[in-house]
Length: 517
Ligand code: NAD
Image 1: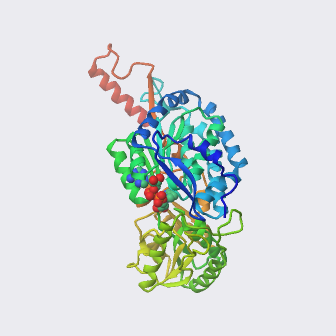
Image 2: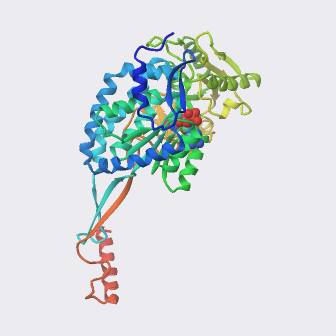
Image 3: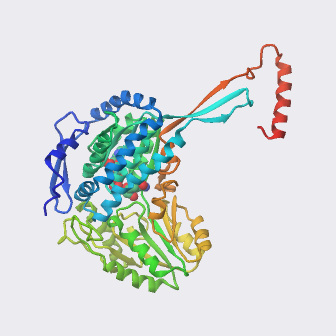
């Protein structure tokens, strides 16, 4: 297999120019389907990261002075470019992740949807707002949204284009500069996104990419940026959070999950099977919101399991740069070994493997079969730990209380799903699940694609949210500019302080009575 013709040496040279790197050290990018080297990219040093943040401060200050509407033209054009150049972006994503092309398409469409949402929402959310002053008419308070400055975005490999771009775009819209550190395995597609932003007219220097070892280069970014948007594992997120806290800078942490689905007794079993197959095996199971635990009411458990196993067996695996396969490769042989360890451990301790359970090196070095387990018990690694691969466990439950307790029996709280025909009942169950997003009659996409609503994790799945109001305002500092029109605090000099306290007490009583304060 040869990499797509769109990935040329000229393109790699152009993309490399967006990396802040002064030395000769390089990073190899690999075509996952074959394990062959795809590109050689520059590697940044700790000093390069500090310099990149420093260099971004001058263009950031100019960018912040523009009215938010003046900034929006860039993103209007970016949105168009992403859609126009979708096949090239999909080639890059597939080459560096090995995912099936339909998930490369989801990866690239996400920043287009996010951009479109904030093109509409950002001018409203960022505008100055009049706030009530202490004394009506006497004080006029205005809430402003000032950019943080230079935002560091640290992103993982599983949705490299989406997670690199979709967190950077609202940060830029809010008037910040961005220094982006994607995972080195998957730097090409976010670099292409950065290239598109500049082609869309983003002023020079407002977004720079740094590449290299996670703890070294990512750590340096946390040490220099004014705010950090991190997406990745819970273990790294805790380190990033502690490092940001030591500098008293803010951060948002979008972390891992062990996401449950509940199939209630009245669920449409065929629809639940369809949703479960999609959400368990989407992106080869390397999706933070994907379903790894399915709790099925005992009255429909056997019917669900039989249909689910059949549907899983019917999935088409393959290494192809077209839309013919349902499931692609895992990101690396390392990830394939980690997934196999979970399955082998479960099998050795007595779990049943109904379908899958093996590598498919005949298709490519990192392929692993979609796998369905039952009989998973707490002593098995895949019971509570995130597998982050195409492996799902199915359990029966007795009643609603049982299902809720089982679903909530985790330190994570990212995503959950409930299937049931009675929507009042399904909603009632949803409200009791400890997860940042809950999908009713869907596995994950309904909540994720609702950009106007927040998305993020409870518990060890993270801090803060992307999308919605918070997904933009987290990149700003709230500032209150209060103008005193009539001198009320401290009291006018002509009034003795003793008399002032009496007037003040009477005024406060009156304001309370008429509801002014
Ligand atoms: P990871 O934590 O290993 O790496 C994420 C990023 O952090 C990479 O760019 C990496 O180079 C960098 N990094 C590593 N160590 C660092 C350090 N000490 N300081 C700063 N940066 C550092 O995660 P991963 O394996 O790349 O991604 C998979 C994980 O991400 C899974 O747990 C998945 O659930 C999670 N994830 C969460 C979301 C979400 O929105 N909640 C989305 C996608 C993935």
